[in-house]
Image 1 (cartoon, rainbow, N blue to C red):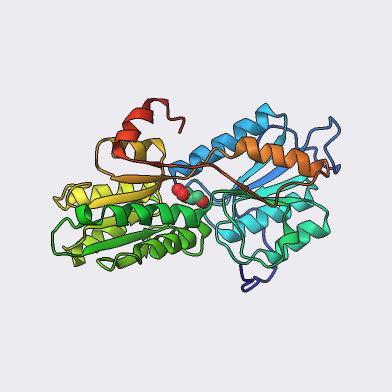
Image 2 (cartoon, rainbow, N blue to C red; image 1 turned 45 degrees about the horizontal axis):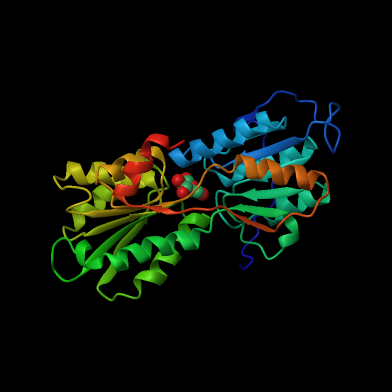
Length: 332
Ligand code: AHR
């Protein structure tokens, strides 16, 4: 990846958003574990924008508790400046390890250099940063978002004939993008575009961000439907935006999954329920249960062990029939 613009380090007030300590103990003054030998991790989360994120937060908090890791957790409410502020606070507190899921890809080098100068290892989870300097973090744990986009595109190419719902010989796709500048939004669009290029009948006719939220997906879909009555397919970068689109499609008097086909990414319970009901046609899985692998990596980097620079999560895809089979046992 290319290094892009660095943001200037600026004086930031620590009271602008909630810094919440989870798992107890605020006595994290000594490096390499506090007085009772516990590892202290500072985790800067993106926010609570989606069902996926809620499941991801739960996995991290529950695993930290089970593994006896003192977790300091912040919710950045979708703002990069809040995450940078949280990371600076963790550096001041001399935590043993910092982990975070970057809201957007660019603008991290300055704060990561500060962590490196303080000898605090950093682990990226879920999303990558766009930096040439890979010494700024020990490992990146998460999905391959380009592959997720490719899986969505492959399905559409294989199902192009069925997806031409108004029978005009073209498959008009509207894309609900994730947060602008976020790795999953960039990569899922890229992987999808690469695959649908194989079929000239498929075209993305409109593409706009719904910020990974249900409300965002609904609002953008409403405006797409008002300006175009030839939409065949919605490709939503996550389940929540797809679920918002379903509301907009139903309000417009159309049948989601039939009049307009829907492809989403994540496979959270609400998405899988809609898939099993035929309102979504295909879901590409993105696994949010990163807690166990993250805590394992954290222990290793704090112990000075070498870790893999890239740790991939295993994921699949779901059709409506497959969703019906697994729904009852779905954890999130
Ligand atoms: O980074 C993972 C993405 O972020 C999930 O697909 C989406 O639901 C979340 O908001």
